[in-house]
Image 1 (cartoon, one colour):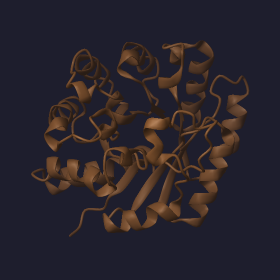
Image 2 (cartoon, one colour):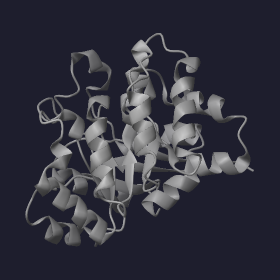
Image 3 (cartoon, one colour):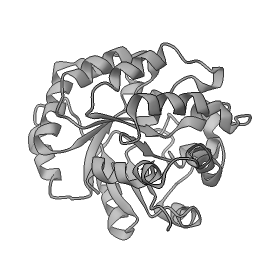
Image 4 (cartoon, helix red, strand yellow):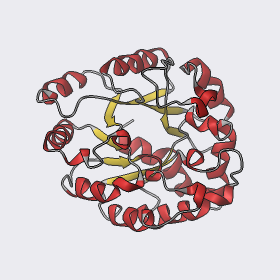
Length: 278
C-alpha cells in the first residue's frame, strides 16, 4: 500500500521583479510565474496527494491569491499566509482569517530583516501571542545566525505550535555544522517546535551536490526532533535551482528507504496533517 505524501512547503507566485527582488539574477531560472497548473502534473508524477502553500511575499493580498488557488485546486490542503504581526490590530485581523479554514498559520521573512532579533520585538511577540490564542501555527524562517534569538523566542511561547523551515538553512555547501547543530539541538528540546526537511538543495552547491552531502544534517534532525516532529517539504519552485522536483524528492526517498512504514507515514504526511490540522 502506497504511503500518502503531503508536500508541506511549496510556493506559488506571479513574478514581479520589484516585489520578488529576492529572486536575483543568479536565480533567473525561477524568474517567472509559478501557478497550480505548473505543479499539478509534477505532484501526480511523484505520487504527492496534497500540499501546503506558503507565502513568499509580505502582503495580505497574497493570502487571497492563495485562497483563490486553493478554491480552484483541491490538492492545496492548507495555506501559510502573511500578516503584520506587529500591528496593534492584529487580533481583529486574525479573527477575520478564521473564516477561511484552509489558512492554517502565518510566516514572516525573518531571515531578511536587518534587525536580526526582530522576532523578539515586543510588538512582534504580541502578534505571536494572538496566533496562539486563535489557534494558528507559525513558520520560523531564519538563517543560522538568528538561532540564538530563535531559542529565546520559542521559549517564550510553550503552547504555540512552531515549525522551522528548511532546517534553518545550515551551510551545506561548505559542509558547515557548528554552531548550527548545537543550537538546533537546544531548540528541539521544546516539544512544540517541529522542523521541515525542505530547502536543502538551495543551501548546497546547485550543480554539484550529491545525496550524501545531506546525510549528516538529516541524521542530526532525526536525533534532535525524532520521527514525529519532522515534515517533508519540497520548497518548489525554489528547489528547481538545484534539480527537478523528482531529483530533490529522491534525496529523502533514498535516506528514509530503510525506515519503517509507520515512520515514513509520519514523515511524509502524518506529521503535516497533525501540525497543520489538514
